[in-house]
Amino acid sequence: MTALSINLNKIALIRNSRDTEYPSVAVHAARCIAAGANGITVHPRPDQRHIRADDCYELASMLNVEFNIEGNPFAPATKSDRIGVSDYPGFMEIVRLTKPAQCTLVPDTDSQLTSDHGFDLRKDGDRIAPIIAELQGLGVRVSLFMDPDPLQIRLAKSVGADRIELYTGPYAEKFGTPGQDTALSQFISASETAAELGLGLNAGHDLNLHNLFLFKNSVRNLLEVSIGHAFTVDAIEMGLDKCIKAYLSCLR
Image (cartoon, rainbow, N blue to C red):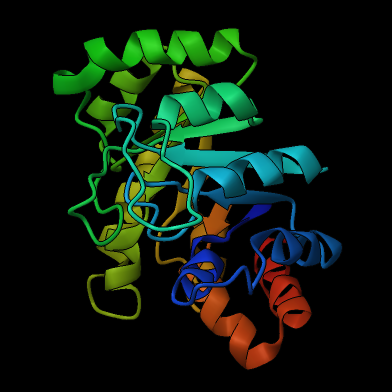
């Protein structure tokens, strides 16, 4: 079955709206795992607007399922301007200290509301390759956040990635419209290219209870999906345990 990794950024975002430790990211991680989630994903950004460096350290010390940390490998260290919030040590330093099972490298910036495109490895490949090698030397599996472009996926293989995570925003945008099948066909083609190259395949962004079943049953060899925004909304409506089970049902 395709693994379900729950992204807890939005839980942290709610916490950060007040000067408090409630709701607890660690407690919600434990609840997701108890309900059947196969992994936990976080995306610490330099502005620490949701997940903070300290959250990553706490989760790394407690998780008994796969831990996936995603972010921009070029994100530098920054000073915190909030009392009680530690400085951001840089994305790579967080990964070095936590050694998660998987690190998903994403070409985002603080100016982006959320991740909205994959790597252009024609431009960034030479910078990415030594980072991949370092992470693999730490025993961390490396996935690259990619658009469904077969040429770029071949470059992901050439720079040493273990997996790719397909950015599924364009599929979600077209789901339920006349453009749905055309959008989905791009992801099917991308999955076939990944399989041909021996790359593991993950997916994420705007997947939800409405569009996940079709995607999972159309795309070849899908190993993992990470879901956060829709999960948080659905958990409010359905309750966390029922929500996890509903997503797992889509992946069976």
